[in-house]
Length: 225
Image (cartoon, rainbow, N blue to C red; front, top):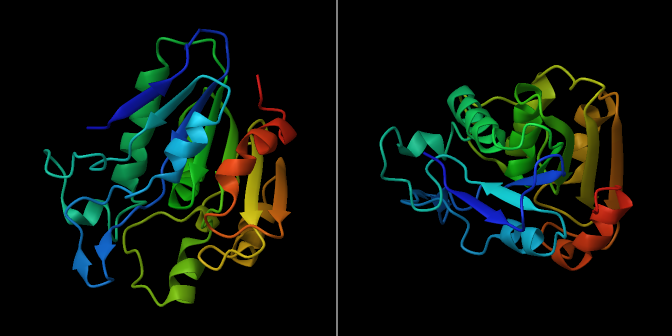
């Protein structure tokens, strides 16, 4: 099950922006598995509210109050947060959400861990023509090593997947002061893509100042209505 939130008037043949949240809080204080991994303050909601385009937020499985529903167990939001079942379920949910808009070009936007998922999902949803990542961890293995986290056993890793098809445009936004997802970890993943734009903003970190600048960043990528 996935929670789905919509903003604006969705009209067929008009672009639709689809948002994916970050990892949230899989663990409490790094030692106890959270009962609900949903971000306490979801920056993705704030980004979506500042986006002038009609938008959908497709919730990750077991997030947004669904952690106790069927098929949910802690592995879904801990070691398996980017696993094949998670990626497959997200892709199915996005395809279902877009069925009513068969002629709408879709832009997939992921923040932090949601950016990793966006890269993994994009090839599985034909309607997606553009991927945007914000402060993302696009080399999962390098990211876990940097922070001393346990390996995300069973998760997929954008750094180990084939490059996306050239038809899919990619815009990767990173903060020059981001110590959570340092941009240097993403270079190898991004540079082997064939249709990408990488923008590093010197004064930004993992949370600052994406929300305030989001309309301008969307416009710079040519994604504003």
